[in-house]
Picture 1: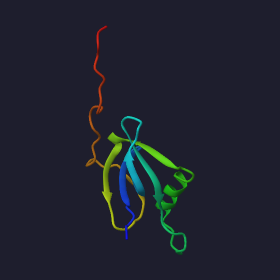
Picture 2: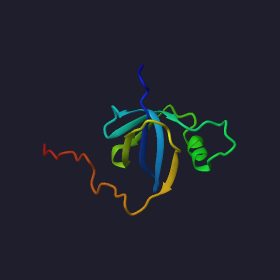
Picture 3: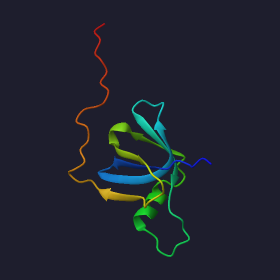
Picture 4: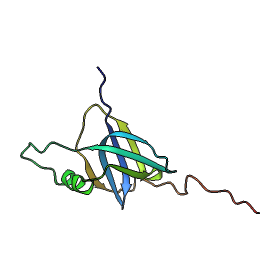
Length: 109
């Protein structure tokens, strides 16, 4: 019996840290980007609805895949079960890379 993989992905977006859960995460063919597919959100059967998770679900509704710049990714964890997706304020403990990962070489022709 094969278990399906589930990933918790944290990335920086517009000054906030997004924490989402997805079934597929891989490097994109588009250089410098990570692909996040098959996002997983909570069940709607409960009486209590988390407004942060609801905001994320609305933001990503209709999205088949997201391309996130690799330098914006804070962390990727493979997890046993889904937690609550959330958006938190960016604090001083998370620092972006100071320079691009790739700098083209300058050729004089």
